[in-house]
Length: 167
Image (cartoon, rainbow, N blue to C red):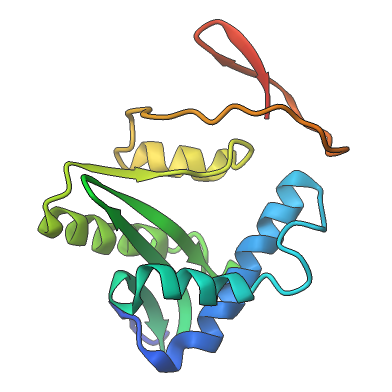
């Protein structure tokens, strides 16, 4: 029988395992954008920057038998909060851990009394967009548009208000 999965507050001893999860997230972005340069040589260092920015009190982890297998963070700024990031280790996906992490962070945002809770998945991350939509994120508040001066190739076919965009 598999060990029970617990969602709990981040602890300092979780740091290295959370850095590994951040690397997994970066590798997923590299895959969906077909760009191995995303995140640089040490993408796990961005976890440290994120931790310093949001504080350990705004990060929760999913743990099974003392192994951190998922994490979620909450950035609170004035009247809104953002879920950033939400990561489940590849070998533990499709087991509802993402929903449990999301539930924990949604509860925390409600307790804090923020009127808006948002999430900003990258446009090409269709699975994640569909996941959040299923979980109740059905209001679009912002859309980031930019000009591409890089050599990165983009997919076409995203339509918003009758306008076609690459993503």
